[in-house]
Image (cartoon, rainbow, N blue to C red; front, top):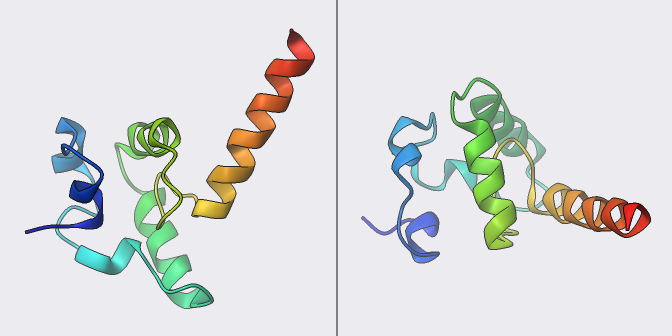
Length: 90
């Protein structure tokens, strides 16, 4: 089965342990569907591989869906804040 994650490349080993494994599009709610976004974040919040998922999404620059408990916009803001902190520290 092709999922949005597999379209990004190989599926990481930790993905088999993810709470969202096998949920299909549940982690890719429509923009503005606050109920679906909250449901996806709830699934992430109880996941043992949340950190790995978030780091993977950040490393890939993935801006789609809920990954590691954050939306694409939240991940973009996190990357921007991290860059700004690195610039200040340099």
